[in-house]
Length: 317
Image 1 (spheres, rainbow, N blue to C red):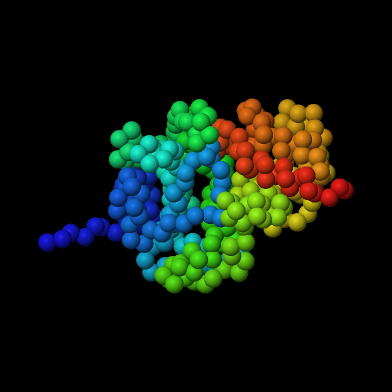
Image 2 (image 1 turned 30 degrees about the vertical axis):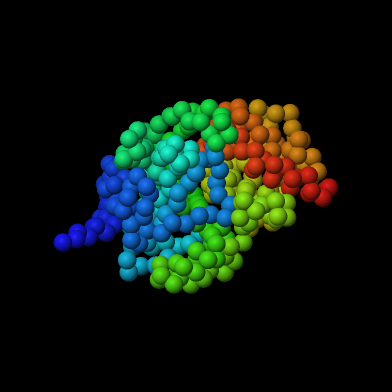
């Protein structure tokens, strides 16, 4: 006699409580190995948000009988009961350690973001409402104090017009192959217009400098630097669809000069990356200066190089 595993716990995804353990949702057939349950689909982003070099395992759950809706090249419109799941890991092979799993739940009252911290035994992740600090060695060999965000800090990146929203799965940042599979499975209503536009990060050097850099800024900065988000008062709008040079920082003076700007005068000066505040803050490890403020404790060399190459090739104003 064989026993069938219970399906994903929709009552936990859509309910009012905060499940204490990651296993309570039943998103995985094998939690420790991150083997997804039926109906839970792995995905990757063409250009991902960088988090100290962490490996990220991403999954989406769309409840049976529902489907996401295509909305041009922007975010897929997910139905109530959807869960977006992202696990952060460091190390390789037998040395790989799962550090945290963040879940974003689309409940009838709106999206809720919750962080789960993995135990030393790598058998379970427990709700960490207050967040945590952990010593981590990055893939670059740097020793950092890694921050698991608390429940409220999740809103600093996922907040838009005072509500929590997803920021990653936009059609332009998802592969056409993956989107086709979602359509065929019935989990997505149609192939989105403008799909698969952002370059695959591992192939960024084959892409034009502006596309690679703009994709990086979209994935790493635009969730805060856009109208209605937490850094909207900066005057920068780093979204992919923005085409106003001034909004992108080109020859734009900072709203508030100070320590964050160093002694520099403009956010971006064409042809002069070392005189551009944008790159200065990206390359700084100093709290209060470093950008992004959340989500990293070290400098992304590949990301800064992409932005540097873009600024170098910008035509003089």
